[in-house]
Image (cartoon, rainbow, N blue to C red; front, top):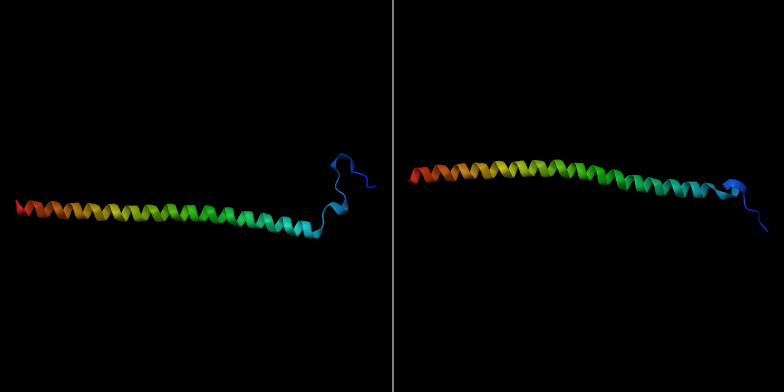
Length: 74
Protein backbone atom coordinates (compact mmCIF):
# COMPACT_ATOMS: atom_id res chain seq x y z
CA UNK A 1 0.00 0.00 0.00
CA UNK A 2 1.40 3.38 -1.01
CA UNK A 3 1.88 6.01 1.64
CA UNK A 4 0.72 9.56 1.15
CA UNK A 5 3.33 12.30 1.37
CA UNK A 6 3.12 14.45 4.47
CA UNK A 7 2.52 18.21 4.27
CA UNK A 8 1.89 18.19 0.51
CA UNK A 9 5.45 17.18 -0.23
CA UNK A 10 6.25 16.47 -3.87
CA UNK A 11 7.77 13.13 -4.62
CA UNK A 12 10.03 12.60 -7.62
CA UNK A 13 7.33 10.50 -9.29
CA UNK A 14 4.74 13.29 -8.93
CA UNK A 15 6.20 15.22 -11.83
CA UNK A 16 8.02 14.05 -14.90
CA UNK A 17 9.55 15.62 -17.96
CA UNK A 18 6.33 14.88 -19.87
CA UNK A 19 4.26 16.68 -17.24
CA UNK A 20 6.56 19.71 -17.35
CA UNK A 21 6.55 19.72 -21.17
CA UNK A 22 2.75 19.47 -21.28
CA UNK A 23 2.36 22.26 -18.71
CA UNK A 24 4.81 24.45 -20.61
CA UNK A 25 2.93 23.80 -23.86
CA UNK A 26 -0.43 24.66 -22.29
CA UNK A 27 0.93 27.86 -20.74
CA UNK A 28 2.56 28.82 -24.05
CA UNK A 29 -0.72 28.35 -25.89
CA UNK A 30 -2.60 30.43 -23.32
CA UNK A 31 0.02 33.18 -23.46
CA UNK A 32 -0.06 33.17 -27.27
CA UNK A 33 -3.85 33.46 -27.35
CA UNK A 34 -3.80 36.29 -24.81
CA UNK A 35 -1.02 38.19 -26.62
CA UNK A 36 -2.82 37.78 -29.95
CA UNK A 37 -6.07 39.07 -28.46
CA UNK A 38 -4.30 42.13 -27.02
CA UNK A 39 -2.49 42.91 -30.28
CA UNK A 40 -5.64 42.46 -32.39
CA UNK A 41 -7.65 44.65 -30.01
CA UNK A 42 -5.08 47.46 -30.20
CA UNK A 43 -4.76 47.16 -33.99
CA UNK A 44 -8.55 47.22 -34.41
CA UNK A 45 -8.80 50.33 -32.26
CA UNK A 46 -6.25 52.17 -34.42
CA UNK A 47 -7.84 50.95 -37.66
CA UNK A 48 -11.33 51.87 -36.47
CA UNK A 49 -10.13 55.34 -35.48
CA UNK A 50 -8.43 55.82 -38.84
CA UNK A 51 -11.45 54.61 -40.85
CA UNK A 52 -13.86 56.65 -38.74
CA UNK A 53 -11.74 59.79 -39.17
CA UNK A 54 -11.52 59.32 -42.95
CA UNK A 55 -15.28 58.77 -43.19
CA UNK A 56 -15.94 61.88 -41.12
CA UNK A 57 -13.67 63.95 -43.39
CA UNK A 58 -15.44 62.57 -46.48
CA UNK A 59 -18.87 63.45 -45.08
CA UNK A 60 -17.67 66.91 -44.14
CA UNK A 61 -16.32 67.45 -47.66
CA UNK A 62 -19.59 66.22 -49.20
CA UNK A 63 -21.62 68.58 -46.99
CA UNK A 64 -19.46 71.52 -48.06
CA UNK A 65 -19.87 70.57 -51.73
CA UNK A 66 -23.66 70.34 -51.37
CA UNK A 67 -23.73 73.68 -49.55
CA UNK A 68 -21.75 75.37 -52.34
CA UNK A 69 -24.05 73.90 -54.99
CA UNK A 70 -27.13 75.10 -53.14
CA UNK A 71 -25.62 78.58 -52.75
CA UNK A 72 -24.96 78.77 -56.52
CA UNK A 73 -28.51 77.77 -57.39
CA UNK A 74 -30.05 80.47 -55.22
